[in-house]
Image (cartoon, rainbow, N blue to C red; front, top):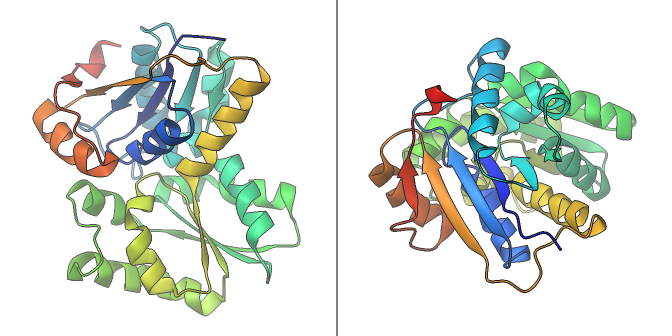
Length: 270
């Protein structure tokens, strides 16, 4: 058993969808979450800037004695994972491989869609991973740059005319392509699951990258005898912007009150 915490980070609040899954399937674990809300979104940044931010995020999390890190950010997972793994001596997981494996298993007509940030799509990581696993699949990748800022503003509910209009504009291309499985390639996007499901229709299976990554992390820790055991789990949350703003939306995303568990830090010190 390993009592050390798990570190999780994202550009903002979207990674809390992965934390919610981690707490559901590993209720005894201790989790340290960092959301870089002062610099969200990451999806429109250049690769060198992304790598700089990601290294700072990891350095902050490693100020705690961690046993693993989950990159709950599709943009960092697709652009910086190899460097971060090479520079650190603990397991670091991204969100791409587990989601691709799940989508490849689900598709019936061999037409799969991926929606993600501009940087994630531009990296080609999802396309390469699909090609390596199932070269017979037809993969349609689509950047949806407005999704993250709208989610961060709380505009993610079915019935919200703004997000539904944006979703229809983006996703109509995937309906035309005839995909039967859609990877929500950013951890913000599961908050849009209702809107995306409504837009795509009931015949399309949705893959939650945060949920798949959480399951992969559990399997990795179990294989290494690295699970905590029967201790009571906990979670602490850190943000690079105002704690009060983070706390308000985090409670909504997580479905629980996080009052008193959110702290603001200066990420540029790391």
